[in-house]
Image (cartoon, rainbow over all chains, first blue to last red; front, side, top):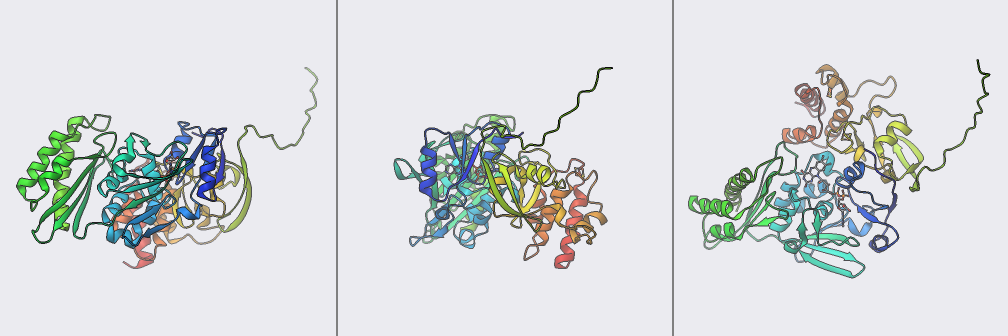
Length: 289
Length: 178
Ligand SMILES: Cc1cc2nc3c(=O)[nH]c(=O)nc-3n(C[C@H](O)[C@H](O)[C@H](O)COP(=O)(O)OP(=O)(O)OC[C@H]3O[C@@H](n4cnc5c(N)ncnc54)[C@H](O)[C@@H]3O)c2cc1C
Ligand code: FES
Ligand code: FES
């Protein structure tokens, strides 16, 4: 359980990190919090030649709300700092709540938000939340800077739009709807484990009509990428989230989800659980609206 | 009997076995500033145990699950098996050895573990004690859920959890009042 030999360097700027990644003579890998990468090194599942530590790059340690009200989380920002941040707790409580489901404080004290998103474990909490909150991802590399939307960012298990020679600079969360309710529900074997299934729900309330104006329903553990379920969202829009709407949302989840089976749960168990968690999450989100 | 061949002793630093980078780091360990040459791949847990002889930090799983190797890095509980020594340049590390050095009295956390019998074999104890120490150092008393979450980051193979939790509660009572 020891890593194979590699070299290590602390990048001092984004430009330096990108140049190191682009060097064709060495297989370089970015290291953020190391909470997924070091276990892989210890088990020798990853054998990079060079680790580029990005956590000391001053340009990446920002956790700020811009003039438009969007939240920017730099690549060096740790999960614990994000979840404790008053602005995050006020404006993006779904994000703060989901982070508290990641492992334990001893992991979140090192793990970064962007590292979890770039790593993209499909059972992870943050990818579904990023999709539900319609996050944008700012990526840089030898071909310049680009922005990718959450729906295009997650490509497959452990695979995202970030190329081998690219760096995720920040995740940007747009301002939350004026009046909204949220809920994050997950099933795990033990608290702190990766989700067997989880759901993020965001409901926007139409204050005039007193009904749901828009809804976002996204599952993790239901496929290789976060699964958004418009069919379930449609059942909620225009309603006051009563019994009928909830039953329809439940049916939409049962009909629309096709999770796979693994050692933790059969496909049928996952689907049933997902539908159940959805009902619970919609109820809570509506109560918070 | 064959005549004994005189053994020749030469003292030398072994050459680098592998072409992996070495780095000079300076960090504070239990209040003492230390400068060391470390190979990139050296885990902080091995640096503490094998290079500094601080074997109070235990190593169980080496992939971040068991919590036995937890120490405080800049006052926060962290897995030393998921940190490289080279990452710790400029960082302050506190291991279980920092708590009651020499003949110093036990800290409230150590005393509580002792009085509540918060251990059986003791393998998991240093990790639990360091996490509990961080809890008692918070500005306000952490709530029961926060305590459960923090203790959940440790596995006790002897399943001594009840007494461990009792010990942590006692230490928190002592620090913050009941
Ligand atoms: C015991 C344990 C329990 C855990 N439980 C959970 C859990 O319940 N839910 C969960 O979601 N996660 C869990 N994790 C994983 C943890 O949240 C990690 O912190 C996270 O997945 C990765 O973030 P990191 O900053 O540590 O990234 P690292 O480990 O440093 O990197 C992970 C990967 O992402 C790449 N990477 C990192 N940052 C960037 C970037 N800015 N740009 C491009 N590539 C980048 C790295 O090259 C690497 O391939 C757990 C980990 C442990 C050890
Ligand atoms: S040895 Fe580090 S967590 Fe198990
Ligand atoms: S007391 Fe034996 S492992 Fe916890």
